[in-house]
Length: 253
Image 1 (cartoon, rainbow, N blue to C red):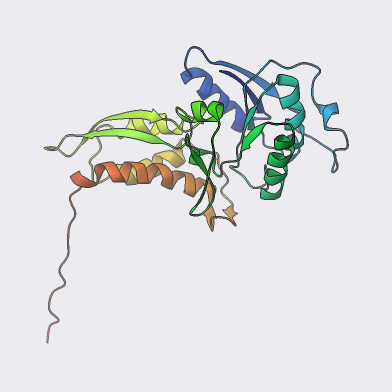
Image 2: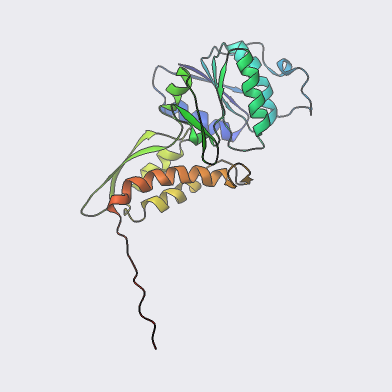
């Protein structure tokens, strides 16, 4: 699979670097650093796109400037890409209205696009758009990408005697590499503490999703992303946790 990452800064760089490091050997990953400044109205998006770009099957759009979304249809035409993942980890970078427009523009040129919010909600079959709401999709290139990168999925092994985590295998990494970072630090932790520590480690990486309150979730996208990973860990260590029940005493006379 041929991938083109569209970035403008550190957020996109981290994602593409992680994909490049851990992608299968038959994937090719190229990067285009898009402009980071645009006029209020972009009359001719093609003026901001280079004359040539590497051929691609899948575009990963990870900019930190909303104007880049308007360039993606021209980038798709130039590269021949038929699939686009446009991350929504910050409402300022890709507002919901612009995300809908982008998918419409791409649909008109026969390019399929998903806009996962947050990015680590992406799986091989669906992606998140707001609290409790998922959208199903079918696209071979995006599904192949999401098999390895997207919604965090760990396989955790716990010693039943010591109740300590003895292994944490990454089955699907967050695109930014956060899941791999957390997995390496879970080994040796008690099952009682693993889920809570996973949430803290997620933030310490640090997650680069927005820390502003998002209207679609009523929470920050950083917390939403962290809870995805935390819940995955909590479910697997639950059988080994030691739960203390407190019985209230009788009231003294």
